[in-house]
Image (cartoon, rainbow, N blue to C red):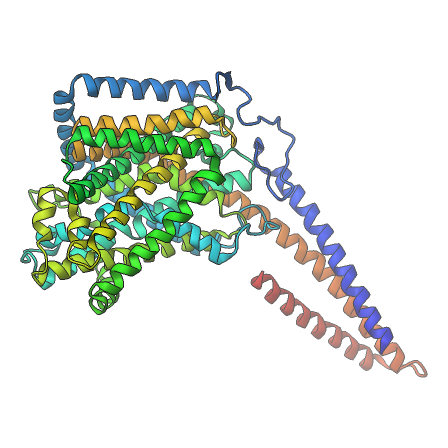
Amino acid sequence: MKDEKKRELASRKELARKLKKAEKEARLKAIKNRKPFKGLQIRPTVSLFDEADRQEPGENNWEGYGFDIHPQVTFFSVVLLIIFIAATLLFPTQAENIFNSALSGITKNAGWFLIAAANIFVVAAVIFAFGRYGNLKIGGVEAQPEFTKPAWYAMLLSAGMGIGLLFWSVAEPISHLNTPSPMFGEIGAQSPEAVQSAMATTFFHWGIHPWAIYSLVGLGLAFFAYNRGLPLTIRSVFYPIIGNKIYGFWGNLIDVLSVLATLTGLATSLGLGVSQVNAGLNHLFGISISTPIQVGLIIGITALATISVVMGLDGGVKRLSEINMVLAGVFLLFILFVGPTVYIMSGFTQNIGYYISNLIEMSLWTETFRDTNWQGGWTVFYWAWWISWSPFVGMFIARISKGRTVREFILGVMLIPSLLSFFWMSVFGGTAIFQQINGLADIVSAVEIDASIALFSMVDSLPLSSITSVVGIILVTVFFVTSSDSGSLVVDHLTSGGKLDSPVPQRVFWAVMEGVVAATLLIGGGLTALQTASVITGLPFAIILLIMIYSLNEGLKQEYEVEEIVRKKVREVREDLIINEIINTVVHDHALINKDSTENAEKNNKVDKEVVNEIKKKEKSAEKEDKNN
């Protein structure tokens, strides 16, 4: 009995040793035969190193005076921004007219394209999650997650929290309540049908569509960084298409567009945030709502962001983010419990059902048969805004997602933050709608005057309204600071050739530049200018992201083919070892049984059948194990 156990243990060890050796050899051979790539700063966890010359991040950078920059990307980005800022400040009236015309023209003539693109992003994300690439792991087969699932989910939720949720959580549902989306037909303002359509439309703008965009950008960045060793910049995602040209003109162009998209997306959020801070100060202290006041607030809050930048990632943005998440959670729970709790929770459940049942129609509706441009100020603006934000949010998600499978990554990014957004909107928007339809407050009139005062009008009808208004102002301010600080980190990545450790003065420069762009847009046309900037940059960047889907598919396909070759080789080795083991075992047992006599051919046939049966059993077991893996 002991000898049998020893023999079995030795056999298992031998099998494990040979399988590991076969897997290593097969992976190295498959990778060697794959198209070469240049590995950069972030090293993959598996041995993917090819014989190509390496190009480290920033090896062609210009250094000095506290800066470490990629010259082409930084120069062209700064020049374009300076031209835009100077033209807007020198000719504010003309700039406002141009912004109005551009927003109207783009949304009317190209809105259908942004709507189609957003749907393509959702479909592509679902295919990647549930298709054959779903089990591929970010960082390679041996990569392990750096964070537990609860911690990872928490960070995804923090990525979904921002100025936009605070600004629009009351203003958007109330706007749709009073002016329902034409898609739902001729329904009366503030009617039960208007309530349901208002929440469904809000869910639509904050649900799976934006998070599908973020998931694809994040997946592309994470895959090409951790599986291929390329820099954590948008240009790397296009390696399967243009190869080493990512280090030349085309790569520079992609990163310049990424810088402009990120800055305008951030500027839109910062502009909305400072408008809301101004509204809160007006509500509490009577400070006038005006562009000069808002520009002054931008200067002050940008100064706070600069201090956060100097304090560093751990001392600054991390600590502020933790404080803000706690404040946001307390604020949410307070509104939930002092507001119409049953109405909120019942509406949350029903609104999700209505959103799901109308999702396809809302996704594909383009106002074709109506002489209106309702979508221009809502859906088209949102899709462009999310596309502009995608390098920022995608890079953050990529940094925290090593060791996750493609399926786990996409489903986690698309579903968890969407559900949080739905709940947040249900609590704040549901409370505001309840107050409006029951005559407790006239929030519709407040939104018609200025959308930025909507939140404060809602909390005015609740207990401790002064305290909650102050909390709201603090939340928006800290979101402003953390967004600016984090945004400067992302822009630094893009303008330093993918370096992870750019100098502090460089980050300060980009934090200030974000504030300057936001102030310029407010001077040049307020909310319309903010929306126009997102739409103008989001439109060309949508084309970049559509090409990215194809490039990402090529990269995942190559990785999948390598893993298939490895699995096939491992299975062949396993089957050979199993056959030898079974034959030896059965023949040995047969010899023991017949050691004192010579059996006839019938017993030899019996041995053969036993061997075949055992092999079949082992093969089935191996197949089952392969499927599970």
